[in-house]
Length: 93
Image (cartoon, rainbow, N blue to C red; front, side):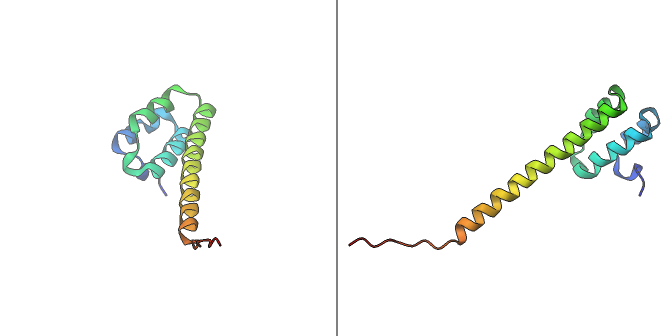
């Protein structure tokens, strides 16, 4: 699959300047964010940061998004379980 497919037109023009390694990392973020991809911010980071630092930035961003999604899923599961549990009234004598 082509890296260029996942990037918006303005990012495609910058690929040669950024380099293929950083372009792969940009594609990871673009694939995840789709229409919400903040092209200008990520291209700026790609141009300014060294390759390894940029990779770490992308990995951190992907990991933080994944963790927040996992937390939301866990909270949803807990709320569903709470709804499923029967509620008993205790009788006092």
